[in-house]
Image (cartoon, rainbow, N blue to C red):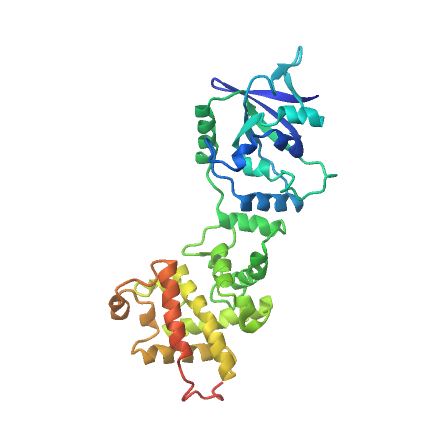
Length: 364
């Protein structure tokens, strides 16, 4: 056995002990039945989350927060005070025989996914790499105490905004593949003078009245696979020009700027309207391909006005939630993602069924 040194922590009538030890060793002492059974004082284990953390650790990720554990009995991982000091220690296994004797020594009260990502069948870092985890250990806590600690460590924490986490991932060069595909074009849309979305996108935690979160824009662009339209792999600059021309075309056809607010056509300047327009972009792209036309503002305006006119309405009516057209639908198509998707599919089908009659190929 080896000594693992600890600091005692007192909070009201509860005492616990803080230390650190190899994550590979610590996980061998956890109650492994938690992996396969309903939890008494924890959320269910998610295999996907274990793999995500293991992948993060492999890419030089650090885990700064302590695992919270509670010992199962007083005979294993018992705590002793070092004479004439404020330091404590516990005996920790070193040999295979000792690990066998000490397995199932503690319950996990917070951090089970972090710890179980170091199981032999999950861990991805090489065995030569040292990786310690901090732990906060309670001595034989009751089931009620375990549940209270889990409740407090999770319920009392305010989660960090996902859009701010996206900003941090960008700074740390840790973007996901989806984020890598679209983050730069979102930055261009927010910063370039010719963009209809200039200064409207929230890149981190800044406040922008009526702004769109970068994370939202990335998800919307990814869902419509804008980068891969027509089987291509569009560059950031091409995507920026395409989206800018496209949204500018909608602005002229509708008669409203996306950075402005219109009382009746309110969805046009909201993320719901942007989602609708981007969901339709592949249909416009395919139409331009079939007609051998360049997608520019003028082309988009003509297509929108033509398809709206065929329904006996204007482009403005498509967004006017106070107008007769949307009222006759019996539902606000911009009320949630599903109705927006259905609305976009309906208009995309109308666009696809449109003929190119009267289209002047020389009208530049």
